[in-house]
Image (cartoon, rainbow, N blue to C red; front, side):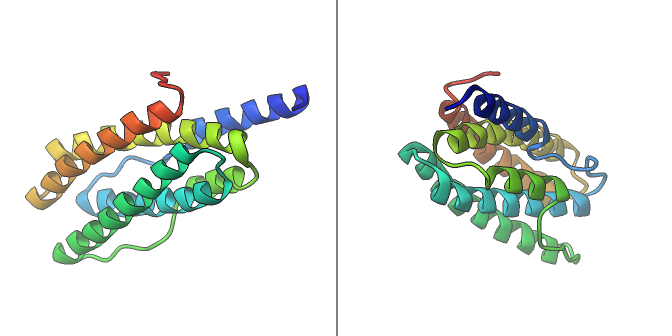
Length: 170
């Protein structure tokens, strides 16, 4: 690998880490929290599907399969919660997540694995903080309970992502 390619890969990793899981603003109500959760789930599923194609690591692919299963389940649960609270949510991903997906799509093998792992650590750190906050501050009991349960799963995902990232505590 040429020095220029290594520098470009390093810059891409930094850009991915800086924007992973980014949202324009923190949610101010249960509706926004659930909307952001569903967008994050959708982005995680898409990134994991990309990992199954672009990764050279069996561990990354195993992690990606777990992300698909867990985030598909959570997205369905969040959609049911939104329906129970009588509001609808828009499907899709954020502009920031679309940018991350586009950047990851340009990588393969070990370069992909490194960028994906770092992006997963950053994203799960942010989502963990958000769910911990909403487990205390959510407007309704069902949302607080959902956020509390989700935080446990996200904490596990974060531990696994750190292992993919070389055990990094950043």
